[in-house]
Length: 223
Ligand code: B12
Image (cartoon, rainbow, N blue to C red; front, side):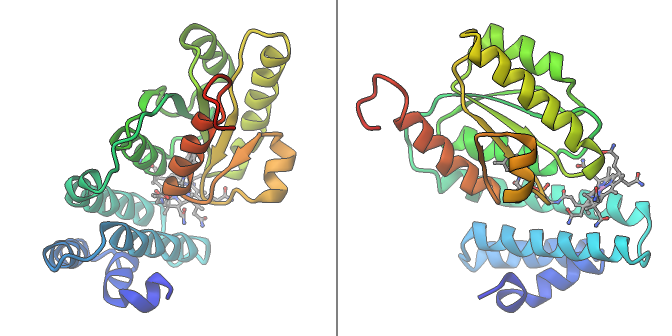
């Protein structure tokens, strides 16, 4: 069942930028014991509709800003329930950031929160991160996985360059990490262009993938 079918009222409240309505619905669903991930999926669906309205010029930049704020508040309400749902597992260290040219961080922050609540240590470099900063920190921190986030097409090139440079250092033996990318419009075609090792459709998928990558680390005996 799609989020639109499961929670049309919540999807609609976010699409309509109805802040009190959306937050009241999130709270009511939480109190009714609804799966917090399903509530989050409905919020994400609402955000997709906001994006479509922006593309159709029904909303302006202020609409995106408003939607971002509603989503952030919804995640704050959901956070305790999301964190309670975690299964304690031994994680690794993840280097995470939004690539240069892109300032979107809601999805990245959600991934960071979920990784942390699943036992990973996250080194979050923030947004608009130049390739050389990713490289520098990857070399000094030696994380187990590097995760790049990107939502806008004008930043795909900087994501591609970041991946290219990370791989060059990997080939030279200075880094030994898999590269995972994600963000709104990433698909298989784009992953091939960017050259990343892995991609995930959403944050929870990313967490699952990071767990798998941990199991495949040399010396763990589970690969
Ligand atoms: C909110 C928003 C904003 C806010 C961002 C606030 C913030 N703090 O992040 C503001 C207002 C700042 C903004 C600005 C802009 N935005 Co904007 N924005 C959005 C909007 C509506 C929602 C994004 C969002 O937060 N979604 C909710 C989160 C949870 O979803 P998500 O980020 O995709 O993350 C999920 C997954 O992708 C995944 N994920 C994300 N990263 C990663 C990384 C890894 C490794 C993994 C595994 C998973 C993962 O996990 C998350 C949860 O599952 C989208 C529309 C959309 N549908 O995406 C447009 C959208 C992304 N924006 C867009 C545009 C054009 C812009 C601007 C250029 C507008 C302008 N004219 O200035 C600027 C960009 C400036 C810049 N240099 O970055 C376009 C991009 C189109 C394109 N082809 O490039 C979109 C798609 C809207 C549209 N349909 O036109 N935006």
